[in-house]
Image 1 (cartoon, rainbow, N blue to C red):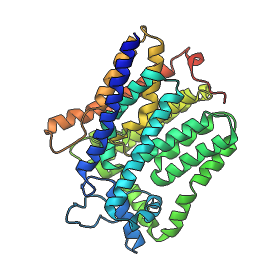
Image 2 (spheres, rainbow, N blue to C red; image 1 turned 90 degrees about the vertical axis):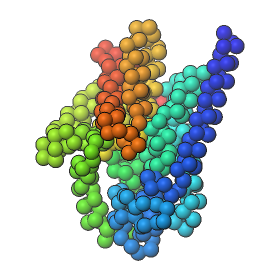
Image 3 (cartoon, one colour; image 1 turned 60 degrees about the vertical axis):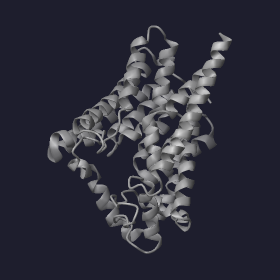
Image 4 (tube, rainbow, N blue to C red; image 1 turned 135 degrees about the vertical axis):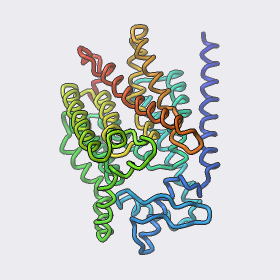
Length: 395
């Protein structure tokens, strides 16, 4: 048994090293001038603003890059990126790429540790996450969601502690993320649900919004353009040939059209938020379960949810696994459902390299995977009579 454990540890270690090498190679092969990288959107928008040009415009034409995006974030990110625009673009690209990735992977390891996974099990699950296709795609894009993953993990970890400084830091993290990408502001709700330290959470959240306030003051003349971009976000993707946006907004608008779609999506989103609040309030001291539920709801009700956003679901997926493993063999159906969810989330994103019918089935499968994750969280973490099995964090 000891020898078998050593062999599995060795293989898991090899899998981790191979995955890290593949991640870095994936970033390097795409290169800094790959037209799909989201980092270019941040860097060029920041450079535009620093040099007195309009912030919310298309990217500049570059001989090695096709300008296909418009900066569609609050001005905070562009202002924060200004120091990077004094570095050569390639240097800034590598610096952010490795930093973003290190923060995200640290967050995943922290998540596994805090929910009580240790030893071989933690090693194997970490290796599995490193091979998670949405992580590889997000790393290639260098999207700020890698920072969101790290920041939300920090907020959750701090709110598990019943200490003033931790509550302040949890609010600060969510406030900062809300200032750069708006939708993480929803995670203030589960932060405030836990009794105690709520004024400190709110104070931290307000402090986290300071960079956003400063950025808005510095870019006041761009505010109208930002509101224009923001107002069009929900309908931006109606022209896509596939329902690539997996949120309730993207799915409803694609299948029902731009008139009925937003109405139905608003009703579904309101229902999801109401359900999450109704289920969470009686268990508000069970920080892990409540946070997991709101993470899934966040992706469902967000204006835009791409498949690579699945990396934000590390906690609910790992927590469902831990609860299912503890109740084995009675939970074999849950494990099968979890495996199916993971497989669907690993389907390839929309690409011109695949036939249209493959892209369509893939995006439908990804949407089903997101809803399956929601169902697993409800069944496993919030089932009736299971309140005493939750993770109550006392301090």
